[in-house]
Each structure stands twice: as C-alpha cells, then as structure tokens.
Image (tube, rainbow, N blue to C red; front, top):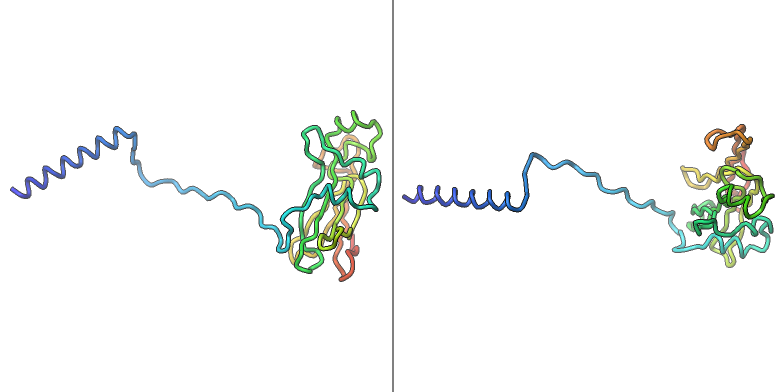
Length: 197
C-alpha cells in the first residue's frame, strides 16, 4: 500500500512539474552551449595616470609647431583627431604619453582650409609626439612631423618605439602606400634616440 501511495505521489509530482514547465515555456533539450566570456579591457602599463588630456598637453607645449597647434580643433563628429596611448618607454615605472595627430576626413579639411598644413588626404597621422607626464609641465621627449606616419609601440620590454613612414601617391589605397620605411627609437637613459631604419 505504501509503495502504491508513493508511486501515485511521484506520478502526481511529475504531472505538476510537467505542467509547470509547459506553462512557463521552459524546455530542456540537451546540454547548454558553452559561451565565451566577453574580452577583458586592455590593461594599461603600470604607472599610467588616471587621466591625461592629450590635446591639452599639446596646446600647453610652447615649442609645438604653430601649424600643428592650429589644427587641434574637433572634427564634425566633435572628436579631436588625436590618438592617445601609454607606454613606459623610459623604464622608470611611469607611462609616457604617446600622441599621434591625425587628419579629419579630407572633405572637412578642404572646407576649412583649401591648403592645409600637410596635403590631404593623408592616411595615418601627420605628427607624432612622446611626453613625459612625470614632470610638470609634461616634457616632450620626441617629435616627428611629416605626412603619413604611425607610431607603433613595440612588444618585448616595451622600451622601443617604431615610427612607420608611408608615402602615398594620389591613387594609392589606405592599405597600400607607394613607399614605406621604419625608424626605430629607444631610450638611452637620457633621451629617445634613433637606433636604425
């Protein structure tokens, strides 16, 4: 009798569970698929300041080329055409600010100035700088001003910086400059010096 009662209870319980699952829209069909966690935010080098305004650093630099300083205005989307990155190039445990000044889209440049500082459209940047943020005001450690450049932070010990120089002709696509060469810089204990091309 007890067994029959237990069997009836189990059947009733299964019936209720089945009704509840059907009413709630829950269906069980095999194993759940594995979902990868979202990628974590890139880690900044140790000693990176909480915030540094690259445009403000450039504007405050009394030795900055006046023509470059005049281009530090927002593009049509409201964003400044300045790329900011951080790297401990000096090996002192504090990150330096690496800036590349880019062009707004060529149409916007032509509307503002028919003869801009450097010929547009130029792919990549037209000025690159490295600043030591540990000093007040920040000290400029490197300046490269030419059309079609890109500053690349090297892996390894993080103390190297590569400047990629690209020469584009009018018919070149952004992927394919007519000519390209590299200049390597490394901290020698006092300044960033060219170590090769």
